[in-house]
Every structure is written in structure tokens, then in C-alpha cells.
Length: 495
Image (cartoon, rainbow, N blue to C red; front, side, top):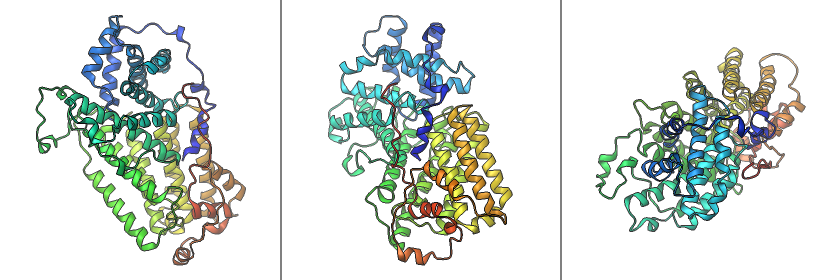
């Protein structure tokens, strides 16, 4: 659903630079607190830094005003910028503080051209982490792409690259490569663009499930069976996310890549069932934690990731351009499940404004409305009052997470208008305005195509009484979402 990215450009809250002179110099306690927040809340998703090394080589010299590494100023400030976005959300911090740290970080971004590629990749990945919260400030498609290409250039995707290295260096190499893969894979799939590397080209194993303090030459790596119990500060969360992204990539390649053609019904059902079983197994085996403060270690986050993957598997695609009633039901259930999980996190103040949240919520809401539009049976099962409640839940949640930003109102307006078009089908009244449907579709880069699948269409005849009400909606359910149709990255690398 990459068209939503167009909405960030004119957000007055995010477009303006912060006034550097209006902020007091943070004290040592602030820096230490923010670094702790970063490792507690964000490191578990992308463990690109080794905490003891970061503290001894960068933070301590930085606080003593005698940095010995050229990247120290950048690293400390970008880490604090990332953490400050969480502080602002969780503890009612100054909502502009993260911009101060980011502006300070990019004042030193020029030093990245003079450091070794490995450290440069770590810095780029930190920029991507900040970009999740402030997508108008970092071109994540470009930044994640160049990071993954650098990793491939260093052969970090091959197991031979870690041969003969110390435990610390080998594990950091694996963590950085897989962080680059996870970040760019997510961007490519969300934007409908090509994957930079295939799973068949990757031989480097997943990181060992270890904590940072265990990455020393004197540490004896225990048997794999002894590493099974997940801990808050090991890589169990990260490894589980990698497994999901590999499945996401396989689904994308099978159903959504540009060269895909319609599958036969038997092949389609068999392939989908295999992926669905894999996703269910992933959810069942998700690690559980006691006392976790990171959203990425919550049960709800794993549920959100699962439902988002199911939507990708069953929504209209090039391999399955005409969905069945069962497909639409699964899409509706996963869309509602995703919105419910986000609501649970929001009720506990555990979710914040990120492009991932905006994208997945928007996708879920629109998919739910499209499925209800196509299936009279689903509408009868849910009823109009229930659908209205689901729509209201989404709008309340979306506006709450957006926290007054322009994009929140724009996306909410789109969903409201789509919903109003849908709700007319519950009443005896005029056919929904086709011009309105055309406008709605424009947000998803939809184009009129001429894919003909006679056998599948005949098989499903009579199941879609409403798709033919007007051509724009029929085109949607024939072709699905053309996510790559719009040029959405009109932003510079660093604005």
C-alpha cells in the first residue's frame, strides 16, 4: 500500500526542521537514559550494535568530550534520536527532542564516507531505524538498499565470510547482514518493488541466540538445545523476525512479483495452504517474555505480523486475481484481527507513530472494506452495526496513533469515504457513486488491465453479486493492488 507514502510530504509537523538553538545541551544523565531506552526497546528488533563495545568505544569518550572514533558523535546522537521517539511516546517527553538529536547526528554524516564499510552499514541501519518514525527525514528505500548491497559486496551473505573470525566479529557480521536483509525486504514488499537478494543465495546462518555480554572469546558456546529458552536481551526476537521475513519474501515472489501469472485452482490451494501452515507454526512458536518493555516482544506484535502476512497471502494478487469467498473471509478476519491487536497495544500506550503502523493499519482497513464490498454473505454475517463499529474502531485508533499529524486525517478521510460507499449496500438505495470509487482506487495505484482467467471466473460465478455494480471495483477485484504504480519516493536521502 505504498501510495500512502505520498501523504507525508506536506505534513507541517514533520516537514519543518527543528530550531537547534531552542534546546539546551542534554546532560550526561539524559544521554545514558536514552541509550538504555534504545537497547531496551529498539535493539531487540534490529541488533546492529554490540552494547558493551558501543558504551566503551563511543558513549564513554563522547561524554568525556574526548571521542577517539570519528563516528562517535554520529552514533551517539542517532541512537539518542531513535530512543527519544520512544521517550516522547511513552513518557510525554518533549515531542521535538528527537529532531534535535537527529539534526546533530546528520551534521556528522559526512564522516561515513571515510570509515570501513562494516561500520558504515551499522550507521545506515540506524538511520533506517529512525526513518521508521520519521519517514520524511530518511529515504529508507535508498538507505536500506545501499546497506544490503554493501553487505553483499563484503560477502556477508555467505557462511565463508565468518570463517576464522572471533565469536564477536562473526556474530556481529551475521546480525548486520540479517538486519540489512530484514529492513530492505520489508521495504521492497511494502512498496511492491524487487527483492535485492533471494533466499537461495544466502548461506550464512542465523545469529546464535546469545546476549551481548556472552560475545567474548572466553565464552563457550553451549549446545543448541541449551539456547532454546528465549531471554529479553538475546537475539531470539530478531531470529524469529528473520524467519517471518523469509516467508514474507517467498509469498511475495510467488504471488505478487511482476512476472507472476494466474495459478490453477489446485496449485493455488496447495501453495497457499503450505504457506498458511508455515505462518501458523511461526505464530505458535513465537517467543514469550516476562517483563518485556519492547513492543516487538509483545504477544500483540507477533499477532500483527502474522495477520499482515496472511493479508499478503490471501488478498487479490497476480497469481490469484479473482478471490474466492473463502479468501475474502480470511482477509476480513485477519484485517479485523490486526486492528484488534493494534487497539490492545494502543490501550496500554505500547504503540507509536511509525510508517509500519500506518501502512499495516491502512492496508487492513481497506482490505476489510473491499472484502465486504465484494461479498454479500460477509456483509450478512457481520451486519451493518458491527461493520460501523469496526470502522469507528479503526478511525479512533488511526487518529490516535497519528497524534494530529496531517497523514492521519488524510488516511482517515479516505477510509471514511470508502466506508460510506460500502455502507450504502446495506440499505435499499442508489448504487454507490462510481466516481468516488475511482478516486479511492487512485490511492492504491490501480490501473485497468485485461487479465482473463475463464476457468477461475466460471468456477466462482455467482459468488460476487456486487463486484459488477461498477467497473472500478470490478477492476480492483480482478487485478488486486498494483503497489508499484506510483512514484512515492520524491524525498532526498537526507532532507
